[in-house]
Length: 198
Image 1 (tube, rainbow, N blue to C red):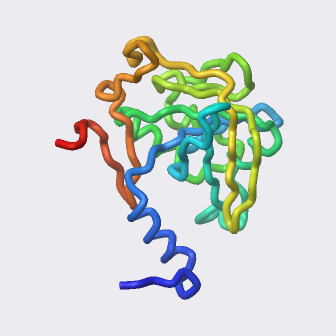
Image 2: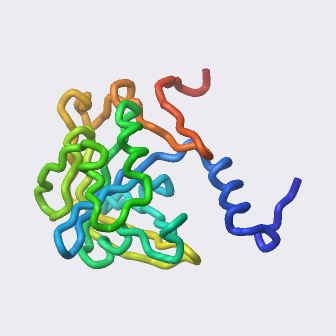
């Protein structure tokens, strides 16, 4: 089988991509509006962009469903406030993360909907998720429109990790973290670790 992107709909190509580029890490992004409203949403088009200075990148697509034709609150908040937090999603927070992925009106606080606890960041205004073991406070470095999506590049200004997830020597206890991965329409629990060659 061969597929030429120009001969497919956006959704058909999207389905091929999300079923092939797996598993993807999930950035649970918390932002704040100019009016001070808290917002929280997950994004699986996410990875490291630079090691020095440390930068993360997230791709944010347009609104879907009943919000089709609009921009997502996360994008609007990052554009105006130029700050955001990336919270890491362990598998035990999967249901709460999924709840925050629903299409809520802008005035709805996803922290409240998912029964999560917002806590203060140190360098920026957006709140962190208390229940998440790892938080990265980010300042917007660059926003690039790429077709239908916006690539957000943020510089990490402060990194937080709960003590019992830190092994020392700048290593993370991944077996305890059990990070959640995104597949096509499903999720994967990453808990089987091995080295290569076997």
